[in-house]
Length: 163
Length: 164
Image (cartoon, rainbow over all chains, first blue to last red; front, side, top):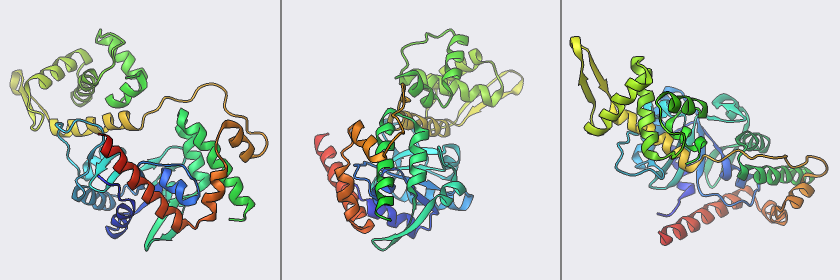
């Protein structure tokens, strides 16, 4: 299955899912050269928005990534409410959805720490570099240590260039 | 599985897992998916009906052995009391936690953190980050960067698929 990043972002936008792009794709948009394999999205956990997201994920045949396919799985708004972080595989590629970001906070804080971009005909909210660094620090995994150093270097370089 | 990954799959904290294993007289090693499933259902039942963990584990084992995971499991008890477990809903939540444990969980970095003195670029370079790539990435517009990451992701997903 070929990963279709722009189709995922366009689908979220067209379905009017209120969300912010976080993680590797956000870092890439801001200038990180790091390769990423999935799209991370933080969504507004209001009931209407959860319903819109659940419908969209259902239409993309979302299922759990890396888990045996024999297990029952129901993709609905209640599922999103019960599981604040989900790692999914869809028809369009790997997608992680969450209603909060460690180190940044719940959705209102995540949205406040994001900026709107208009890229490839899509309006996207993307997490800022400062918030990405805070999120990586909070995750605190071994692989995040290098990412923090790279993002801090990116922030310094962007400042030096007046970006 | 490590304890941290196992606890993520169960949907509990590592401390809860260790306490539960001691209470249930289960060995504190051999963390595997089958045990995570038993313990997750045990926790689910114990919380729902406020029953002690050993009794909840007995019910969980029975449900996992006898029930069809695609339907609710009903156990009639004495005095007209019945226990109904929505197994599809349980497996959905458990599966989400298991996927999280398998895909996103990582052990916390230990040891001294890299120094925060001096320039961030110098610190990154000293750690082994190729900072020359930042320059080439920043020469592109955000639009170009998004297009590139989309192409990279498509390429790597195809490559992974061809290796399976």
